[in-house]
Length: 230
Image (tube, rainbow, N blue to C red; front, side, top):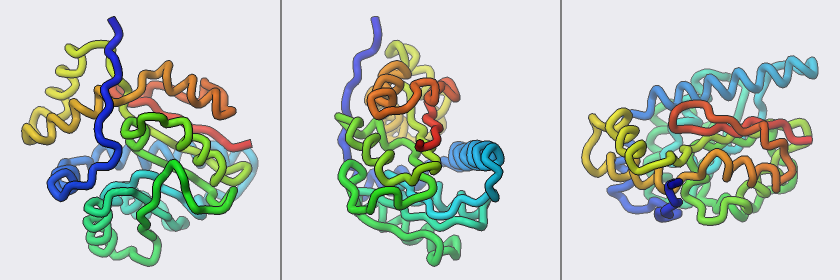
């Protein structure tokens, strides 16, 4: 029997949640996310004979801005607008950005990803890691991603993939969070239960006007949506 989706809070805005999230070791996951994004971007830009640059990047659900910081470390030619709804997360994000010495390259704002104030086609790249599983109805966010990304721009969204059973959830928690606190393990377990299945996200992407094949399973616990806006 397929594991049913069990929602978690849309906004993680307690001080404890923010600190626990920020203290977890996300370095390997963040480095891989940025490396995969840059590889995808380079492949697409080379295909149309454009110079490799990211330009203006939007990061949805930035949390404590660890991925924008990692992106700016790995790629010098970009500026990032990083948004989140959680004030506690953004307060720690300010510290992380300043500690990295790049406050001129990363702008932080409290904005709802389902209803953004940005103009149409404002960004060259829209990226997100782990926002979709927080949303009860993700379709509005997908439409917003499409709206704010320019024609020819890139979309790169990654999130957790809901397992088939509670047993697999437990295995993943032990494998990837077994060394973390009980609180962190519970957060990870809740997120796996709240995540979309691969078929569910493929269906939503198709409804947004994209090829469902642009979504693929990229690890035992993640799917990735990598697409070019046309």
